[in-house]
Image 1: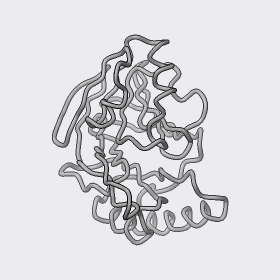
Image 2: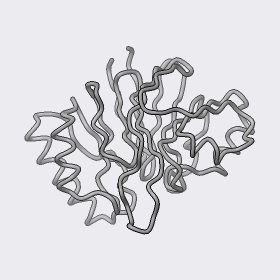
Image 3: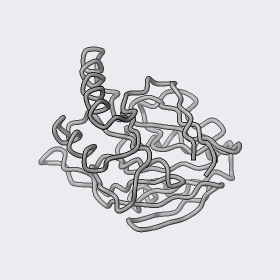
Amino acid sequence: MGAMKLTKYGHACVRLEKDGRTLVIDPGKFSGAGVLDGADTVLITHEHFDHLDEGALREAAAKNVALEIYGPEAVISKLGDIAVLTRAVRDGDRFGTNGFGIAVAGEWHAVNHPDQPVVQNVGFLVDEQVFYPGDALTVPAFEVPTLLLPTNAPWVKLREWVEYLRQVRPGRAYSTHDGLLNEVGLRLVDNWLGMEADRHKAEIRRLAPGESVTLDG
């Protein structure tokens, strides 16, 4: 695989770009402006509003009829009659979209609040390089060169995401799902990620919104 540019957007959203094509994962209400500009493919891990902004997707679809959207059945059913290609995917699926190869792993969102139902959640491995688990600590059956690591949420503790990181053992990892933290909380996350980077002798850190890295295939 060739080089791919990864850009962090607000909270839980990333853009991946290669060979003139753009893939966006989880453009939600906290992602920020312009995240879907020029997008060819959108992957949605689950239906929660911080990962799925239906209005923004419909606007993007109106501008680009060739847009492709993939997610679990619950997400696709929410989009209803959106006028672009949509496809429900599940654990174990593999498919290609606009030059990107995708593998799907995981089925359910982590338990959040005791009164809230557990919703469908799938993780995506893009081009055998980048794994985004969504709101779950899914340990995939494949190697993970780059992990997008959820570091703050009502459903995850520090101990849990550290143990998850150590179990997956990616070549590198970048924080995601960190948009609810103030500067104090972000500094704590930076410190914990730094400790893991020292332990793993790997690049493990937080990307600021708008920051990009280049991943070599």
